[in-house]
Length: 172
Image 1 (cartoon, rainbow, N blue to C red):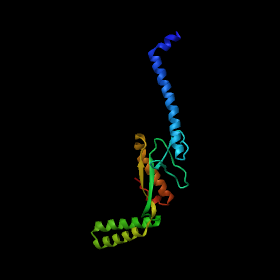
Image 2: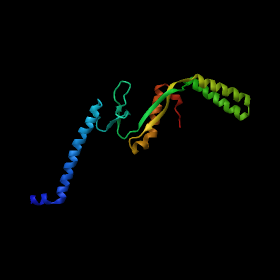
Image 3: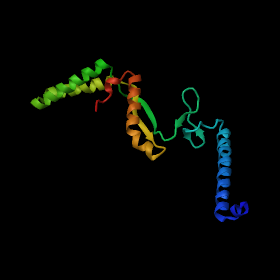
Image 4: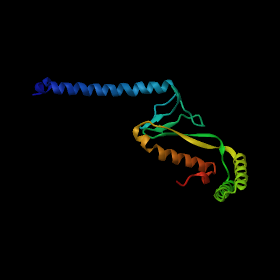
């Protein structure tokens, strides 16, 4: 009976496939482990991957720790720079000036529009500060691409809050 089982070609093929799968899985933990160890990294926890600054160079956070990312999540980077970053009071004044400019345009008051435009431009120039400017999103999977917009918007809004610029968050 056992002789019949081992002489069955389907069984032999399945057994060979099983042995190859087990061998490949054992060989690939060691290959990847060696890849990370050569770069001074521990292998990432299951379900996570390292982010890379360049080929073979891991991305480090502000503490010098390699950045891990959950597999399947979009990769969102916030770009910082100098831009329009008014305080809440400055932003309220900016909105008032824009409203007044709109009313002056509707009345056809060109002189008032020009005066308000100059005042708006002066205010914009005076509130240029370091702030989050935009997000850059990369995807690790099609699933990540589908949820990247909400994810990047949420992350960008969180950084605006950190910089006390929550009044610049769009309600739409």
